[in-house]
Amino acid sequence: PPKNGTAPPKNGTAPPKNGTAPPKKLTVTRVAAWRSKDLTQRVVRLFFSLAHADGADRSGLAKFTYAWMGNYAVDAAMAVALANTLFFSAATAESKDKVALYLLITVAPFAVIAPVIGPALDRLQQGRRAALAASFAVRVVLAAVMALNFNSWLLYPAALGCMVLSKSFGVLKAAMTPRVLPGQITLTKANSRLTAFGLAAGGAFGAIASGFAWLWGSEGALWFMAAMAAGGVWLCLRIPGWVESTEGEVQTSIGDPLIGDRGRSRKVALSDHVVVALWGNGGIRVLTGFLTLFAAFVIKHDTQHDPFTQLVLLGLVGGAAGVGSFLGNALGSRMTFEKPDRLIIGCLGAAMGVAACAAALAGLPLAVVVGLVGATASALAKVCLDAVIQRDMPEASRASAFGRSETILQLSWVFGGALGVLLPPVYWIGFLVVAALLALVLSQTVVRGRGGTLIPVIPLPSRLRRSASAPATARSTTGP
Image (cartoon, rainbow, N blue to C red; front, side):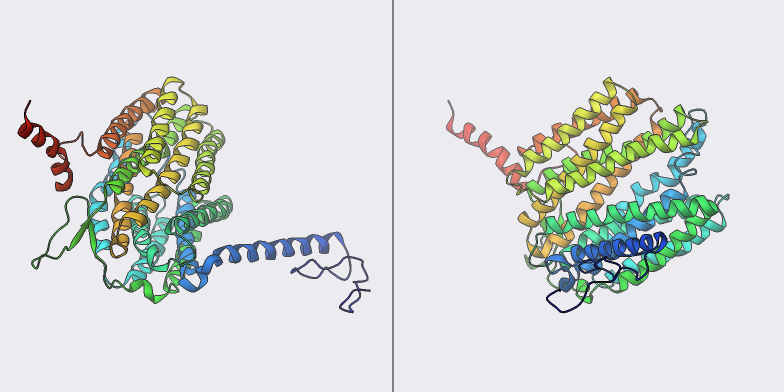
């Protein structure tokens, strides 16, 4: 007999540890239902244990993670709903006017909006939770507009609004993460955890949205998106109130620090390692943004009358990118980043190398490899950037540094996406152009790490100008 004095069930099947009891009467249907319920409960318990680990439940990181997952879920639902409109409707070489209109409506406005959104959110002193909730609330309305006007021109500006709000959410997320950081983990690990949970949510809810699209069309997926966005409002309002505290925060500047009237610094300059990391990350984001749209256009161009093949081929590229993101975050969470400049240059060099190989050996297999390597390099470089900001920047300026860096990375992605739309849908042409561009960015990153610059329009901080002129001054005074 068991030690606790309870007899085993008559059917001979013992209840699993921390699980549900088996049915009293065994049938195939009941056992299948019991197994499904038990497995679901185990997965849910594992999810909550991971989300609340390391003190995340007490610091507020867990509730912040749920809101971040909601943002990924809404984006995934919109991508599924608009898969045959925004990504494919203009992707034919014979309709250059449609391609230009697509670029004008969906991509170009980011170049104007992002520089405004980033600094505005950076200076937001109160109401950050309300701003996050508002980004979801407006997307509820825009999703309804898209569902009711799916075959109208209103679809495109509404989709643009959702994209802008999603990017704004990302900027706010970067600035708010330090406020919910548990004392047991680093900011690098927290950001990696957020990315991993976000990707998992995007995959899971994207699959559910695909089911809605299969049953009720794209409009059904858009109504599912609206429901997810409504849930996101509630998740944002549950974030702890201390994320609103901005006492002592100091904004950051890429150039020299800004000095106030009384000689006090009103802005802190980003460190040299942070600037180098931004150059490297920006170059890699150009590649990932380029591949996202360019792959869709090329695959559509090559398989215009086979929608199923289009879906499979895009799934290969997207799946490789997803695997790369998980791999990069997993590697980054276990690294110490003692020499961040070398790692950033290595990631950017790998991205440039694989793009050059894709130009020389044009075809879908190399595009899949580019997706894998590019996503891995992007995730690893982003983790390195987070670690450098946490290490080099004072605590009072970290939130601003994260918000500003996220804005720069968003702009880089948009620039790459614009290249993917404008370039001809030919593999070797597209990858040759982006490889040449990455080679230029790589050169600038290396030179910037040594205290110089290849771009005169971007001046060096005064401390670097003084250090560069010091050797020449010494030589002139000593003489031969």
